[in-house]
Image 1 (cartoon, rainbow, N blue to C red):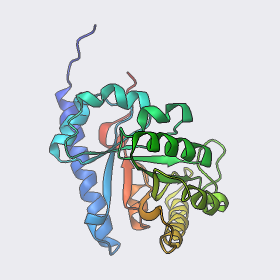
Image 2 (tube, one colour):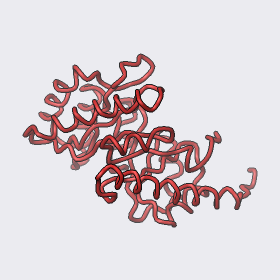
Image 3 (spheres, rainbow, N blue to C red):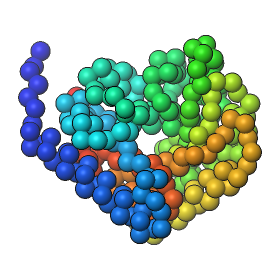
Image 4 (cartoon, rainbow, N blue to C red):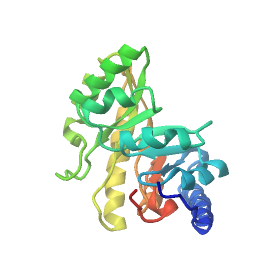
Amino acid sequence: MEKFILDEERVKRTVDNYRRIKDTVCETAVKSGRNPDDVRLMCVTKTVEAQYINPVLDYGADLIGENRVQEYLKKRDELHLDGVEKHLIGHLQTNKVKQIVGEVDMIESVDSLHLAREISKQSVKNGITSNILVEVNIGYEESKSGTSPEELEELIYSINELEGIKVKGLMTIPPICDENEVRKYFEKMHKTFIDFKNKNLDNVSMDILSMGMSGDYEAAVAEGSNIVRVGSAIFGARQYF
């Protein structure tokens, strides 16, 4: 087995990136008239080795997001996860649900009633309640998962009837576009979030609006996001292993 050699320069660069982006998130929140403590920075750790994630966790990062069930489970035991919240943010297949329920604090990518029912089933079986976000395909892109804005209400009302599952908010990935256009998508998403926040549903709290990634997190914060999911801007370009 090839010996892992830690790149100390990459470690330093990663921690510096995290600190800089954390500061930018706080500054953007303040400029937007928001409390910076209300916006969380998620470190997206897809394809990043544990040896480069841990320095950021040791520095103070308290929220990570993984895209793939198997990758997260494979490196979980190597991570310094005390006090760290773990989210699954990638597309989740129903046949992987039983492996991840109870292993993360939130599943952000619930895009169908079929998936929600399986999460409910596995959660009830394990005697827990799973927190989820409903993923919205705000740009109607065929290449992306997520429910359409028009189908969102019906989906949330249906999930509300399930046991062992609680909707904590919404998540989205907008189309790649310029800042003016992306802000329109974020603005629309925020309005939808507020609309649902004002409804009284037993298993729906609408505390979280997860939107914004490495290329557009500042615009997302300005438009009301309270979780931004940043990967490559912290850890550098993905290095598959």
